[in-house]
Each structure stands twice: as structure tokens, then as C-alpha cells.
Image (cartoon, rainbow, N blue to C red; front, side, top):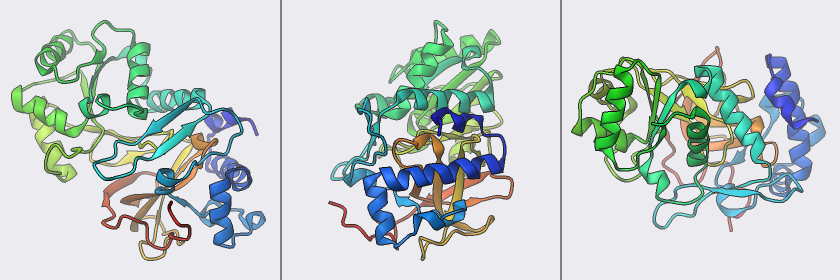
Length: 326
């Protein structure tokens, strides 16, 4: 199977066909996933539909090398991790797939990144090594090729001036930031932006009290003078992102799909409209594992969109503790 075929998916049938092909490939070539499937007594040959595919608990990225390729590892993306927690590690053998995935996904929802001034406010990510988000945004900044594009770290004074100047000049702007830093910005300055997309990447990263999405977006809308706050849904263990253009409803690119699972029976996929644990199929993860049971809670809808409702309280996903996490 040609790896780039995932970016030519146009229909549900295309997606399902390629997803099953990738499942068959990873079931044989990813040692950890193979062992997981064996413990579940899954007959690989009998898996013919995506709702029959078992999803690997995301915690295994903290304890095992999840890899399906025999190629050399080019980069390791690391999760943020907090004191006392082990970081997830995503071993990347082909960076071009990641670059194509995030570029095409952004274009799918927003048009060419070259049309935007990309302003990044991601202090917690810049302060550590191995962030896949920083890799993506840095590539966006380079592709935008605008003199004002860049990382602004903690320089909120300069960022506020640039935002006002670019917006006043009717230039398209993407301000992408972690939630706590965007809140810091609107507490210091007040804006009335008309040509700027405000995109939050979630998380207070221990810097502030967590807010529910509605409350966070209300504060940010008021502070930036915009009608909607956009959001990006991604993680270290994925090579694709879903985007929300407001109201917390996310849409996936054609090579990514979200399902929900029963919180009491992790192997049972729920019908659309039911809340449960979020399972992600990310076909860009062809060289690691494309079928991941996350620790997020959410709900899917019939049009393929989804929303994130929260996180599991338990440190391990119930029903999937078949392998000892060493």
C-alpha cells in the first residue's frame, strides 16, 4: 500500500478500505499492537470493518516503543508530562507524512497557510524539547513567510502591538496559543479584532484553574473582540489534527475519524450521539499505531463531527489493562 494514498481519501468507503489495510499491516508489524491483539484473542483475518478494530490504550506510548516500520527513527515527539508522570514517546520514522498531514489538514479548513501571519503564543511548549505542536507551528511560520510571523513566548507587549497593527491593515492573522497564555494576554490588553483567527490548543498546563470550554471561550471572545474561538485537537500520539471553528464542535480531515467507546467496556463501540471514551483512527500514524483509545471523553455526531467533554479520572483505561505497563 502506498503511504500517501491516505491523503487521497474522498469517501467513507475509501476510508474504511484503507483503514482495514493499515490495521492488517500494523497487526503484523507493530510488536506491541500484535501482542495486545493476541491477548484479546483477535483473529486478524476476521476484522473486516472499522468497528471491529481493537484500539490500543494511549498509555502504551508511555511504556513501550509503538512502531510499525523497520526504517530508522528520525525524531521522537514527547508529551508535556508533569512532575511524577512518565512522558509519552511517539517514534517518527517519516517526518514527511506528519508535515503533509498537518499542512493538508489546515488547508482543508482554512486555506493556504501562506495567506496568514502566524503568531504563536505557546510558552509551555517552547520551554521543553520534543513538542510535536511546536514542530507543526514552526513549519507554519516558515511557510507563511511573513515578517511578523513567529513565536512570541512571554513578550505580550510586542504581541499586542503586532496583533493590532496587522488587524488594522486588514491582514489575515492566525493567533495560536495555549489557553492560559491567551488568558494572560486578554487580562493585560483589550482588543477588537476583525481579521484574526484566535485558536486555542487547550490546557492550562498547571498554570491556572481549569475552565469549562464555554467559560474559557466567553472570556476570550470578550477579550479579543471576536465572535468565536477556534480550537485545535491534537496530541503527541497523533500525527493529525481536528479543528473547531467555534462552539467546540470538531471536524476531522478525511484520513482521521473519531469513535466513542463504552466507558465500562472498552471494546464496545457506541452508536453516534452517545457519550463515551474517545477512540481515534489516525491513518497518518501508519508507521506507529493508527487506532488509539485516548483518555478523553466525548460525543460523536452523524455528520462525522465530535466534541470533547472532559477526561477520565482513572489513570488507566478500564477494560484494557491486559498488558503490564513496564
